[in-house]
Image (spheres, one colour):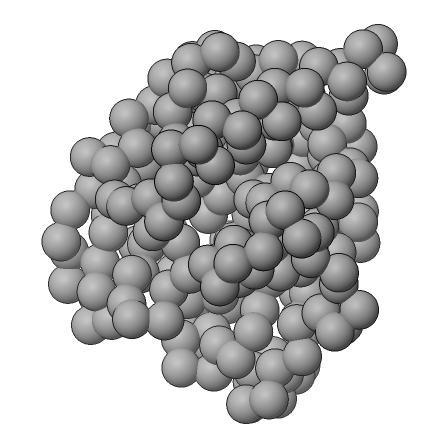
Length: 251
């Protein structure tokens, strides 16, 4: 069984196209888990209009999320809320194979069939992606900004790691190991990537399996850091500590 975990918030402009690209690759017993962060547009109505039992909507109340003071900034707050929203989707996922999905991308028709064979073991699978603008015009490849590196220490060193959430898939065993996400972890994909490298293994597919849409409202940024060098060093040290703590507490 496949669970696709999608975090949504005011995604009415592109979500219908993305959901269609996902559902066309799922079986009748698979599921699309949507965790919505209180959308005020037509996101939920669009999802409900599919009238598809595979779409399961869970409401995540971001008003009750307390952002740690040490992380607080406009950019960090956005990342943190997205991470908690994805965590809520993961908590509710029942599948043996977990795919992460943004609300405004488009999956290539062969994404699932390309990735599933690599998930027969407890593996994190990462693929490349086409970067596109709001009109789906290709502007580059994700691998031009996030060069895949294997190994825990190498991923600690790289800003954000090499496991970009929207191109990740993993097994239920990995999902159970990474949950819960520690409250001071800023981004879910960095945490997932690091723990997978430490405890399990990763596989990279150098093929563009999604159209990764980047536009003015996209939260994630691949080229630029918005934090000071001191902040980055402290955060990496924190992630190193938290990963080792999780690893040794669940051996």
